Length: 170
Image 1 (cartoon, rainbow, N blue to C red):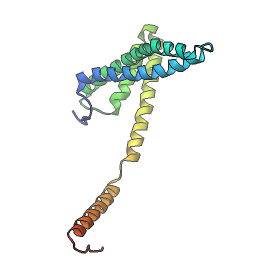
Image 2: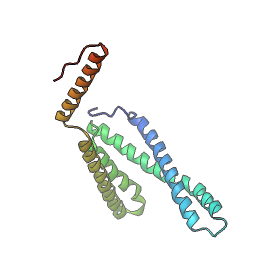
Image 3: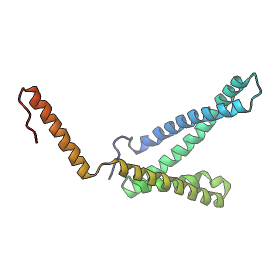
Image 4: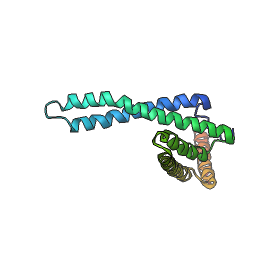
């Protein structure tokens, strides 16, 4: 596979891993969300108890919804990766499009098309921001060369000074 990310699991295992990660994120986020919502909607005197009950009972539901979305997205990502033979940003955009459409199919074709477009646009925005951040954070070849030369000068200075020789100035 071209451009394989070595930090991620290979494709079949990735689906299960992404579902678990999505479930965890959904549970944590759902707990916080429903805790605040339960606290806001509770009468005085039982705010903490009702907030905790609300969070405890609703967080796994939201976690399950996130897991379904994450599993569907990863499945499509693996399908596109196998079909196209490479792992790039287009796979994620196509996966967002397909996931949005697939999860909205129960509402009819109109809803599926609308949610597919929304999923594709949202993943496009995420991928563009990711590319921009990577380009901004990655040093240019000139900057890499200058950093390497500065590091080598520093190491040469340390080596020479430890051996008792006077370092040569440049």
